[in-house]
Length: 354
Image (cartoon, rainbow, N blue to C red):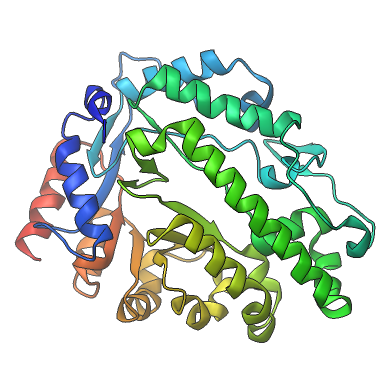
């Protein structure tokens, strides 16, 4: 694999590569994974990350140059890797199928379809749609301009039930699961076909096979983050019927290194079913505003007992305390530090106590 250009921004990439490959193989070198970044030096005018709107309609060449310059003045500590956020919006997969983009402040959605699901199906990828052509243009330009110095994120995969949710809306899709479950299954079959195609196109356009795969974490083999936020609105029986087969298919398309994204506590009721999906390697939880990752240690321990990795976000002190409970072979730590010295102290402490 040709990663030589990444050394320009990440001089210690070889060590990151070895540590991340060990993690994906359920192993560890001398400490668990730690990810942190330091903001640019005081004498550099850092440009805030562009908005979804800019990525959809702005000058991609300028966006890429700005991101690259920001990255050159950012310290990527531990296993942090310079990455490019590429999502065109929350419902980008639906917009790839021709659905109209609707803007709401800093983000966007797709215009929902009020027709009965039976009239909407089949749903097909519109390869000539503006949004899909824009997405592929972004990846192709990124591979040409960045040349592996930064690695682009994969798609924001609100696929499976979330794909139908973006088109139908939460209330309508809830009723569809009761009124026309077979149509929901057909819609999920469409989602699977679309998923496989856009993943294949992403790999080619981004040159991931050459530079490596990235979605917050580096991997030599395919990696992405999967989700099913609609899970919060349905019970275990429906989740097992609709979501599990589709998530299983998606994870088989990607391979054995999928990260699953939990968004808030309402989604956790399906944890037992999710633990049975072989290729869901690591679980990442986004707490509510009143929660901390320290409060989730019981959940994380259950994940690790099922053979899964977890992501823990906290201060260096919170990480030290959590490390007494968590399996170091199965943990990715995210933290915020004020200096390289503070990061090195944490890394040394974890080495000494692992």
